[in-house]
Amino acid sequence: MSILRSKYYDHPDGEDAFGKIVATNKYALAAGLAWSTVDVLTLTKPKGYLPTLGRFAYNTGPLMGMATAFTLTTLAATNARGKDDKINYLLGGFAAGGVFGAWKHNHVAGLCAGLFLGIAGVIKKMSIEQGWEFFPDSPTKQYGGVNIAENDWSIMADRPKGWTTEKQA
Image (tube, rainbow, N blue to C red; front, side):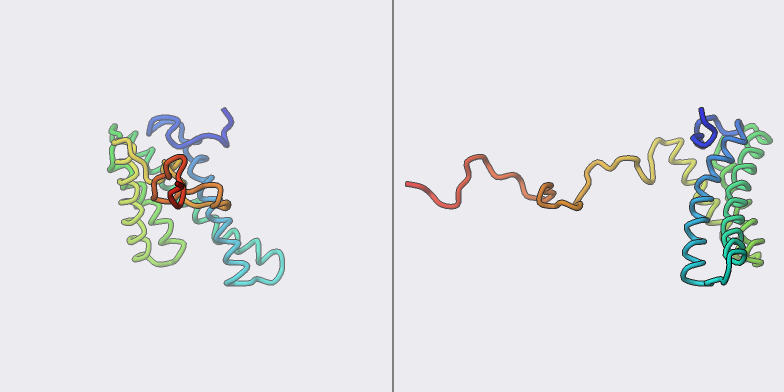
């Protein structure tokens, strides 16, 4: 299997640290590049290549650090405690919040982010244990679309076959 196709839950928690780091950093890299593009084009508007690359590094690096901190802390807590439960994800969320606080030079922001990310981690672990998903892969029914005339997604039932507007005598 290609390392870039690795997913976080391919292996149990506490195993395959490198694969899990790659899996979480893929999303952090995508989010960092997207936010950096918005930042460069609309907010900071740096002049030149080096300042632009600096803004990309300033935004993307800490997000990847947060993903790595979450992954390694969760892995270490799982191995140290010998349990695979929600507390490990809470600790990982607080570690990621600590990286956020260091990035923003604000310990209160880091504590709040750690609390938020820790609770999000606990909810994610609960979803894995209980078998439900926040964002299912394929929706059961898709409403709307580009060609609405071809796909009637109304709440009305189909008309019976042979229906006409007036009685024919």
